[in-house]
Image (tube, rainbow over all chains, first blue to last red):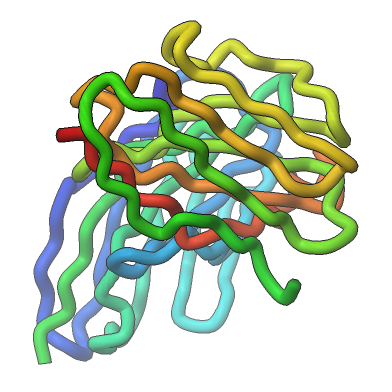
Length: 110
Length: 117
């Protein structure tokens, strides 16, 4: 079963705007990761945040984690057309499986 | 190879036929994962391998699904007597180790799109 659930399911923004998406999960985690999937392609790892971290930055990406609420958010600043993709959060528990949510589809309009 | 390679990229089959999907992981990667992605859905875990062993087969949807890995490299996912609900993209991913999966070092192939008519 899927551990994470992303919100919203779909997001359409203008180029240059920020995109924010959220992920909620059910059980305790070691790390939370975000992946991107371009249409018809495999997933690509974007960023990882550990369970003892609250915020992390990588380029135009900002991830937050609130373990008390079992939720995370991914912010993409100054979006570009190339950011058009689906974004998934993935969590790990006491095993070596990554559990993925259903994803947020982001469309960046030129 | 440079990345995870999957074949075929597209497969159309008739209900009741068997299909085999192949995954060539990145050279040297000992961990290999299979996921299924139905249209507009997230990724459903199927099975993972550490070397040639599959410690966790709990994600396989039914006994029509099986997977093997030989020589610690190539893996084959076999679906017998395919059903329409098996239509999906089957994604393979590999990692240097099971631990590396937790640190974001999981690399995906582009998937095999299966359509069962």
